[in-house]
Length: 337
Image (cartoon, rainbow, N blue to C red; front, side, top):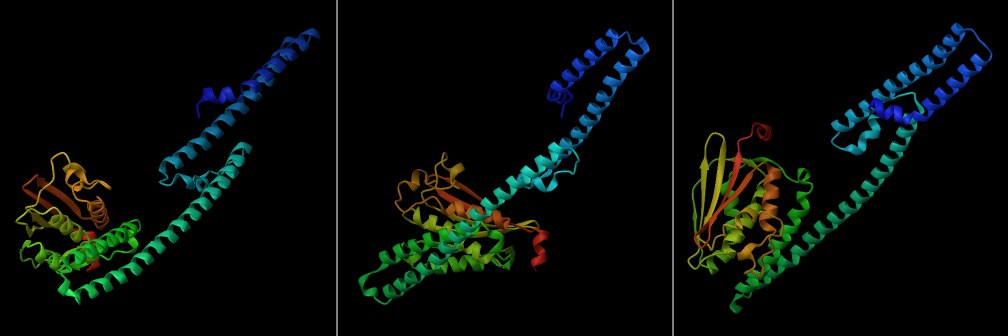
């Protein structure tokens, strides 16, 4: 609070005090009061209001300075009502009461919204788990009738399953800390699971696969990592070249482990490369593929950020694409051991 603002706020009160003081002096002169008495009257009349205003100013300044300081330090500004300093002047008490009522109403609205969102998320997760059952049953039926060359049906069902996984992990990523479990695992084992899950696609599309040996462990959530790798493999298979090839390799040093997935597919244009992790971005190649949603890499990066990993992509159009996931040797996560 500035002194000029305070004076403007009390300007009417100050003017009234001055006018009344002038009338008192004129009244004293009219009755021929002694000069010392008039001087004492002037000093008394104006000195007490001056000290009153000065004390009032410093009291209000201390209150509002403390209030603004607390506001700056708060991450959640709506909690300010809990930190309003105690004071004796009436305006501050009314302000605190009004602010508390506003905060209470706001929190009730937030809680209502939170409960509705949680209900929606629970419903979506339940629906996803339910819909996965007929997908698995359909796959089983198709496998038992292979004389009809069901590969395309299998591929379509696989895509449905992938989209179901995408929405599942998208919903879960909003409250990731409640769902993931960080523990040591060999990333090569997770890669093997993804390959096994997509083995029929590899065989049918005649995709060559190279997988380097790797025996070290990293700290991650294997279930989430499997989903992330599935999205990368899906893209490699979707945007494959005629003689498709995928190579998985590992690099390791004292500070980090890198998992690299390289393919000789159609690649990504230079203009699209900076945006491949953007939500719903499909790019030039994505528009050529009717099944592209632009959500896979977006969710993959989001989950990597939650897990403390780094995901990067390098590519040259019509030559290759390489995705690198970096696992840091973070001492904080060593507690999980």
